[in-house]
Amino acid sequence: MTDTEFTIRKATENDAELIFKLIKKLAVYEKMENEVVTSIEELKENIFKNKFAEVVIGEENGKAVGFALYFFNFSTFVGKPGLYLEDLFVEDNCRGKGFGKKLLLHLVKIAKEKNCGRMEWSVLNWNQPAIDFYESLGAKGMNEWTVYRLDGKTMENLLEK
Image (cartoon, rainbow, N blue to C red; front, side, top):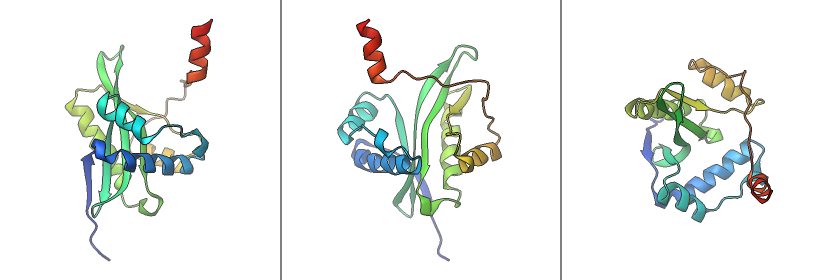
């Protein structure tokens, strides 16, 4: 068995194509391939120029095998920022090595450095491996909350009324 080195680094604009490829792999895993409508250029614009989100890349022996995309929100009740984890993904052949946990703990450190009152994310109801993983770390499902969404077309329709 060879030694494995896992490192985490902050993504740069030069990683936009890599991030796009990892997003597409995540979409395949989540059975949502048809919902990926972004582009490499759009990721460059919105992550690196507009700074709407941040990304860290997980690498095994220098090869990218996962990522986490997150941004900061604000809790009116806590009175502090929160870190919202939009996506965490580790390549299929690298799961079970603790890389997902290392990525999540990296974000916990960032959240503590930024004085965040909490971290939150959503999990697909059918994704039992992810649910089990998060619960094993002490995360609790917020079953009394339902996520609502207005998509781009719906927002346009509302503005036209």
